[in-house]
Image 1: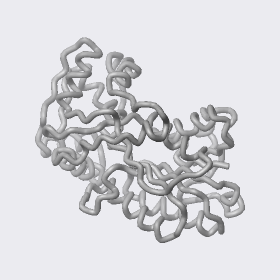
Image 2: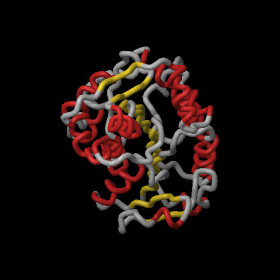
Image 3: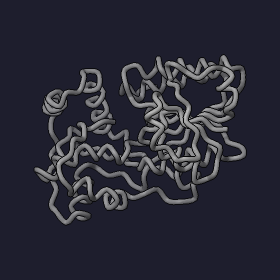
Image 4: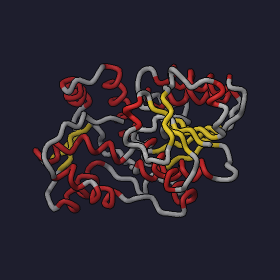
Length: 295
């Protein structure tokens, strides 16, 4: 039996869909009942949360756990609470944890990656079997830029000419599903990327080609980006994290391309153009209420 946390999130929901397609026995952990309304009918909902985990006798039913949670200031505390509950249940399920590329590098001080590193240190101390999925920056992080692209034909970010091996959340979910349903799994870290590394000028050019509209990239300063993020209402912890991430990108740390998606799934990772065509409605439709960029 497989348990998926963060089952309504960017990756978690696609994992749940993939497990349903594979006819795997899966349970989706949701914080409240209403969150279960859109789950595939064959997937069982379980009302619980990382900070209020299921009881030990419930956790003992799952031999594989897929851990997903959003980046937030309390992420370490929340995931550690859940891990300790799994450990206290007295069995050794395989943990497939979605982290972020860079977490494995002790020199990477981006707070989002540092949180995953602290969680990983705790996991390693428990002795639980673990596979870490470490995706590069998600293609979906381009979605909150769609309003500015529609209104101003502009991507304005403090990324310099740093290149990013953007990966689709669907590819990350597909890898997770393969591991969760495999007979045996080798522990370790799988760094997941798209098929190529692109800087944001390249991204603007791809958007221009796919949507037949000229879109430009403006390399704004970190101070300009801070003002924009603050005006958009992000809390200071997240603003600082975003700026740390862009500094990491500018330094060239996000340009690593791997073959892990193909190795796990047998399929090439999605190119950006394919993802853009699928999301055409978001980029050429009406202005939306999407939040500012979130990594």
